[in-house]
Amino acid sequence: MNELLFIAAFAVTLTMVVLWPQRASAHCDTIEGPTAQDGLKALESADLAHALKWIVPEKEAELREVFERALAARELGAAAQDVADRWFMENLVRIHRAGEGAAYTGLQPAGAAVDEKVAAADRCIAQGDLRPLDGLVSPERWPELERRFAKVLERREYDPDDVGAGRSYIEAYVNFFKFAEGHEHHHEHAHGS
Image (cartoon, rainbow, N blue to C red; front, side):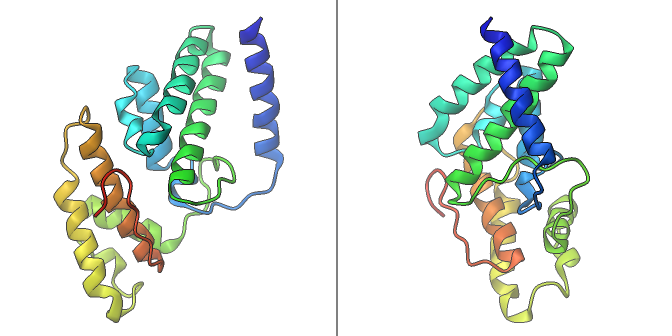
């Protein structure tokens, strides 16, 4: 009975999220973004370490509870798995955004618009160089952008089971993205810069 109530409540929430007009406010708010994708990886592998790096340590217990319930619901069939996956990813993104001090407006659908600078910053990390951001970030901000990018590259190779190292990477990653977008953001996730 609890499973049916869970599924019904989530279906109502999902309907509201889909029908409520929203704007993709951040890269991590999209279902295709790295936060949600790491959440899906955690569910598929039954290893929460893939997702824990995105949240502050104080919220681990909350995410663990959501994760355990989502894993249990996934066992109830394909429809329940879809609902459980979405519910877990939404909670992961919500908790991550709260850790940044940012509002959560819902998990944006596939294909949601992402800021041009964010898309370019993604390409920078994939390519290992800053050329995609050339012309999008003012020259006076470039030295700081280079410094933040170097931290991302330095921290990007880490053991997925080392949550502290993952959080250190996410700290550098978020600081780089926010600065590329034009914010003076300093994300002190697990243990400062």
